[in-house]
Image (cartoon, rainbow, N blue to C red; front, side, top):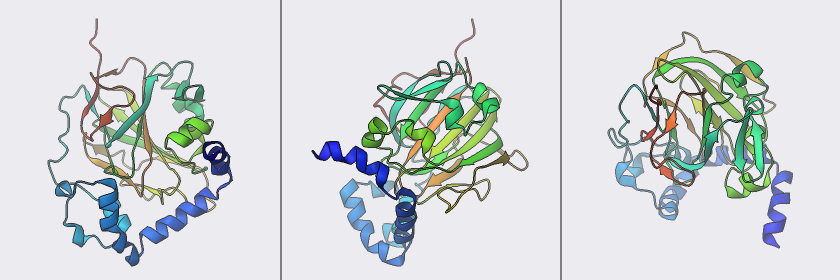
Length: 282
């Protein structure tokens, strides 16, 4: 009975308000009392955390922790794509007829994911996508998968359904309905790459380093535009972070990448790990 009731319940929850409230709670000084319990529950390896645990003043501050330098080596090579996050591969594959796979029997379009922007969506027709889920125990900083210039961004307001297995299997077009913050990158070797950061239930917000764009704004309106100065970021550079867990989707143009060995649905990834390479030219 529980499994039948939950899918219906997640549609009725005041998801955005709940997530904003969670953001305030985890940013309060009292949330510091929950840090050790959080570490124990999710079996977090604190030996690789940037600072001693006692120096984190709120649960949100610990959740968005950085790691010690060198903890996540970045895969080398101009033709190599690195994982932008720690997480688990939910799905990956070809973008056929402008469509991405969410789960068995469920799909959504690139155009929907990118907020109806046909011009941007067409870039990725015939290309590849990969969806990476970040669990509560994962490191939640988001990094550059490639070296390139940041060309533009989009903030797409929406719902905040959970992005765990329950949500993915029961909510149609989940990733195109939840709030997203998209960063567009122009690379020297992998064409145009889109980094889609998807919000979720209890994600207070998604932040980026290149401007003040954020998600889960009350009465938020869709926004898009160029990134001033089209700054160049190296592969592995910090791009943003989640304030609690969510999902990253990468989009690649046709013929630009092929997956590295072992990159498959269900595989665990570490930020910086080799994700794909440019296919050899015949």
